[in-house]
Amino acid sequence: MKLVVAATPNVAIPTIKKLKLTHEVTLVTQPDRPSGRGKQLKASDVSLAFPEVLKPETETDLQNIITDTDLLITIGYGRLLSTQTLSLPKYGGINLHFSLLPKWRGAAPVQRAIEAGDKVTGVTVFQMDSGMDTGPIWTQEEFQIPYGFSTRELFGSLATIGVGAVEKALALIVAGESPQPQSGIASIARKVQKTECVIDWNQTSEEIVRKIKAFSFNPGVSTTIRNTPMKISDARVGTAKIAIGELSKSGEVGCADGSVQLLHVIPAGKREMSVSDWLNGFKPMPGDHFE
Image (cartoon, rainbow, N blue to C red; front, side, top):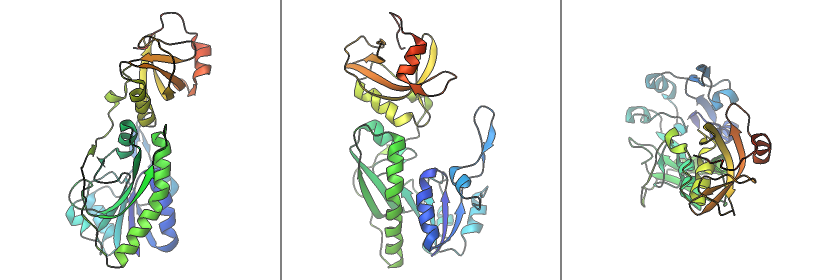
């Protein structure tokens, strides 16, 4: 088939590599965007992996690219497309989404699944329509989430099974089959805001650990001690029974129902390090307390 794949994040790369083996593929990604404190232009992960990728600035530019193609495939492209655009390819457009729709429609399905403590998730390939992740489904693949999985780990697993899901969908499309309407209770995976990534030590240990596992990948989970901010990049449920916010000598922090054992941290202005390395330099004192 003659395909246009519009994708931005690195989770799209396994599927792109597979499609390029057996199809005529034109790659599209978002234009380079200002990033970081210096606001320097940064290329997308797909752009870095495939130098031949096109970077249309407008939807009209994209329409010119996908005219006379068989199918548009989007994977984390980052732009809601009009019905006019979706009508241009012979078979319209399909999307690889990282949840079992209609659960977790929206921008952050993997993060929200981890935050909620979901035990099962998966991928969905659906026919795109005018809504946000509302189109009929071609295929779904389930994935059992191991306890303690992080967003980074789950993205990696779902990117792998997404390859097969897209291939199955293409076979169904070529065979003249029809996608099935979504059924079940819908939920929204809203975009992660930095304001919700500050640890509240009044929550339970499970809630705090899930937040760290969900959001440490991006944008990062923060807290404050000695009036200095720092990020927590990994943790597990602890065993100590200490006051809320209190820091133990072993790196446990008190919370509503016990404690959270810190595993890796990012002090302000420093690299990620193990909690033991951080404690050696921080030298906890009686009364040290996370805010």
